Image 1 (cartoon, rainbow, N blue to C red):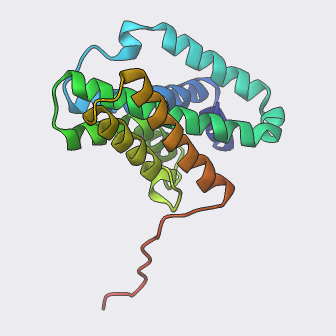
Image 2: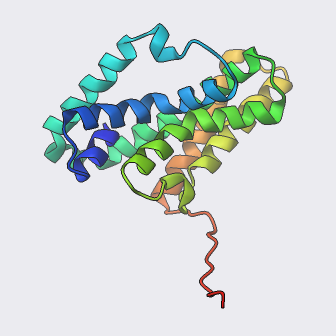
Length: 190
């Protein structure tokens, strides 16, 4: 739904709205699968994901004026999606027996790459590359998940605790406007 709003700010037609929504919702997993040569894509196995995503995007376009009043709800839902997709990305990398650092990055790619693709296609500097505590929340989620797993915690507890910690970090960063340090360099070369 946030993708539909980004597409709307760029005056896209309904096809553009759907494509931006698909890229946002399914792009992280697609990038991960391409990088790890892991097929088939989830949206190929389950084409209903395309229908659901397009329907949500078109609904968002229709009720866009109401959605601005629900900005906080969408930020919370986005934060929840970030941590859930991070865990899914970690699990898929584990299934294909990748090293722990790659598992951690797989989680971050799955959670964050769709938003990066959306922003690039909408000609914006990706949120991930600005000062938001976003990728960091994804990395913390993945690190908690892997650490708890390593300590032998039950799988369901591992998932729930990692999600709660990552979600808390993201929501607290939104609430208190926590930001990552940014690199600023403006000297000209002669």
